[in-house]
Structure formats: C-alpha cells, structure tokens
Image (tube, rainbow, N blue to C red; front, side, top):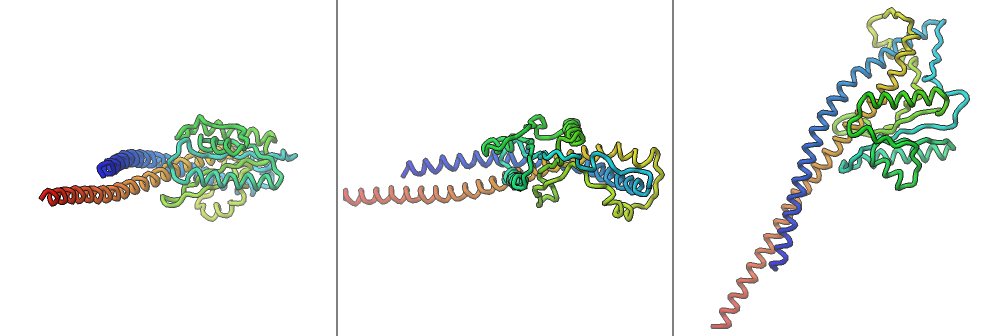
Length: 299
C-alpha cells in the first residue's frame, strides 16, 4: 500500500510540473497575441485605404474612354502557363490546438481538387509544421520559406510578393493563391484560400466605392498612371496582411490550447489528491486492523 501512495504522490508532482509549464506558455502566448494584434490592427487602416484609393482610381480610369485598364496584374498570362502557385502559411511550433491541422486539411483538399482538374501546382510552404506534414505525406514542395520566423517583417514579405509578381507577369503561373488562417474575432478564426494574383478587377468595386465616397478628386498624374504604382502595393499589403492574421490566429490558438491544458492539469491534480487520500486512509485502516488483531491474539 505504501508503494501505491508513493506512486500517486509522484504523479501529483508530475502533474503540478506540467501545470506550471502550461500556465507559463499560456502567459507567453497571451503577451505575444497582444503584440501581434496591435501590429495587425495598425496595418489594417493602411490596407483598407489602399483598397479604397484603388477603387476610386479604377472608377476614374473607367470613366475615361481613352484609358486602357489592362494591367498585367489584373489578367492571366496569354498564352496560359498551365501551372499555378500555392503558398501555405503554417507555424514553426506546435502546441496550438487544431491551428496547423485545419490549415493543412484545407491545403490538402485544395491540392486534390486542382490535381483532379488536371492542373499543375507548385507548392511553397512557410513554417516547419507545414514542411514536415508535406514531407511525411510525400508531397513535393517547390520552396520552403523558413526565414520568416514567428513574426514576419514587411521587407521579407515585400521581397516574396515581388518575386510572385515577377513570375506571374512573365507568364510562369496562371494564378497565385495563399492558404492561411484568417482572423475574424477572438472566438473565430477560419482557414482561407486567397487568390493573390491575378488581382480582382478594381472596377468591380467601383460602384460600392462611389457610394461611400463623399469627395471628388482631381488626380495628377492620370488615374491609370497611379494605378500602375498602386496595384503592386496592393499585392504586397494583401500578402503582409495574410502573415499578420496568421500570426494573430496562431497565438490565439496556442493561448486557448494552453489554458485548456492548465485546466485539465488542475482537474487531474484534484482527482489524484482524492485517490491519494483514499489510498492513505485505506492504508491507515489496514494498519489499525493489524494492530488490533495482533493485540487480540496476544490477549
């Protein structure tokens, strides 16, 4: 019986150690989430304003019959390349619940659908978890981007976006897509497939933009020239926003997972203490019974 109580005490100590680790990781994830949320929130107004300005410029350019809205980033290459590019953004570390699993499940379905349709896919991955998954499943990865770390910098994302735009405009790919975890709220994050290139035609949102606009602008230089400069910026900001939202969603997932692990460790500790008390009480009862039985035998 003494051996059993000693074993239970060892388990209680091990659970307490695990609880301290998970609580610490929860606190770290909370701090990182707050920092990444501030960074993503700070970038949103710029991204939104760029989109609004592009919509206004598209409206003005569309009204000018002499202008030609035919930017290389707005149309697929001709002739078609017969190949698409997919970028999958995952995390470098685990212990974040179903974060990576949901992204990789979405990516697998996307790849299967594309291959069933007879399309060739070049796959690129961000994050060690995604790289390990595709390697285990024997899925070829064209490029593995491991230099972004846990927090992507705009300069690195800009370089990646420029390489995508160069490949697209030179006819290497018909489409460039990104799969990442989109942040909607604290309680809702969903894996999303974003078509990065070709860009959505800005004239499609011209009516919506016009209904919201309160001021008419005079542009210098001409709107079509401004669009030449702003459309590449739109690609860069969209890709950077994908990285920002992925980082926020990862920290939320890790924070929730570590809180659940801490709560489970607390409950397990309570259950083990209850079992230990019962075993200890049973040992005491057994010892008392042996003493009384021995006393009665001697008497």
